[in-house]
Image 1 (tube, helix red, strand yellow):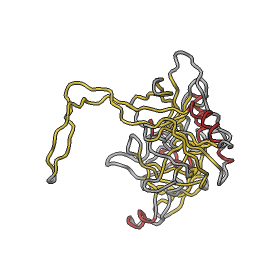
Image 2 (cartoon, helix red, strand yellow; image 1 turned 45 degrees about the horizontal axis):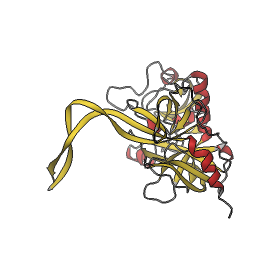
Image 3 (tube, one colour; image 1 turned 90 degrees about the vertical axis):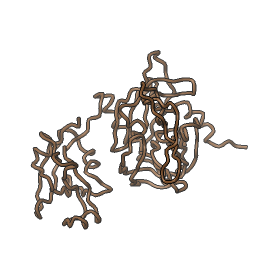
Image 4 (cartoon, helix red, strand yellow; image 1 turned 120 degrees about the vertical axis):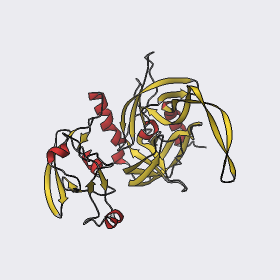
Length: 344
């Protein structure tokens, strides 16, 4: 009987897929007590006032992409800047990891194993996500629920260029992700950051999200999004991202109707809190002449919408490049030129 091609793929891929354990120094729990509330007794932790202890607060998956220990994963897996990250190659083989970059726009993070012994690690090759075809067979690999090591699920590419609004991870942030690969291969909590593999054994995506309450609806970040980040990390030691220096909310029909705005798309320049300017001092936005309550309609001729945000559009340009902004100000449309700065 002929073996499934996934058998050989599993042998090739699994050694390079790792578990990321997230831990943090938290107050010690000395026990529990019951708190009467609403006619019921709630079980509450009793927190010690004496010291802290290392506590596991989360985890996810990742995969090694070079023999010297570079790792790709999802940004939301390693979003807590105060946490400590441990890499498990096997249940009894652990390494500390350094976070080299976090890219919340594309939900990508790059880590490096602290490899003092100069060990060569098993690694995966990166494919070309631009060549992914609808209906193509794929394999999703990760550590389901953070407990089941080397979990494989097979499926097909169910859709391309998907847009979702994702919520979750260690920090309770909501992110809008675009250009995603949709697959019916099962992606469960704990699988985030693991690879989506084609039949050549190459990574075409980073598993990032699934739709709660639905079946066979998983999404992956195209691997080509990560290639640019990798190139910048190896060249500059950091991500060089263009930065406008403005705070805004994306408009839609509901927001515009409620606030009686003249358009239902664009980025409304507005402060988050009282006393805090939405335009960073000395930024490209200030130098260009942007003002609070301006609505940025387009950037370099590209319409700004909920599915195509200003931050997503800006990623297409380089630091130091000039962009033209189409702006609605007090009922009149004007054009401003902004020279993009580097994000700090």
